[in-house]
Length: 221
Image 1 (cartoon, helix red, strand yellow):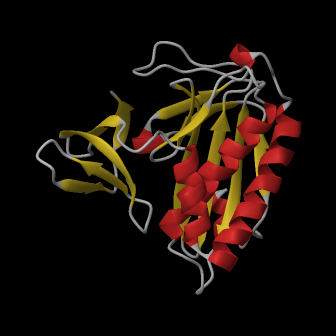
Image 2 (cartoon, rainbow, N blue to C red; image 1 turned 45 degrees about the vertical axis):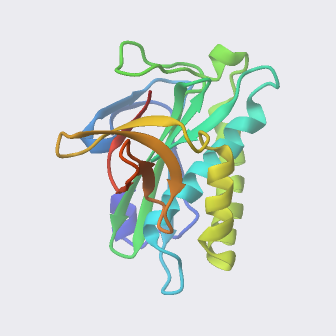
């Protein structure tokens, strides 16, 4: 998709891989997705009047949460957004999102565990199949694309406020205890206090100070 972005591919294009064996997750991690899961990528062409490109992470997260919730049975658990770009069902990761900038475009990759989920990771994982439903990836991507287009239009037309509000409604509650594993190797414990105007994580530390986190792996305590 990065190559397509460089060659002038149109916004709204979605690509889906039946199987992914050399994908990349956050911070260069290997991402493998077997047949039956969703591995999809789309493209947003930035305009001068758009909100901050970084806040497209919020757009992708609320769209993915909405799509997953369409298929999850009423008794199948609760979908929660975890900063920066993960979806959890009952505390286990079901989806991840990765954004990359390519000149005036942002490439957004979304993976959803529909039929399978990996084992032996440093955090619990799950799939929609575990919760009683296994959507067809071709059908799921149609739901996701429709949701993403709608939230992208609101992001452009109304700004970040409605997207941020939806994100917070679907996120872990304010006051949730979190640990931030920062790129420099430091670990920061705090209580979730929401997001700043650009979508960065705000933590309240034990001494009462607040800390704004722009990049980190986040663990629920």
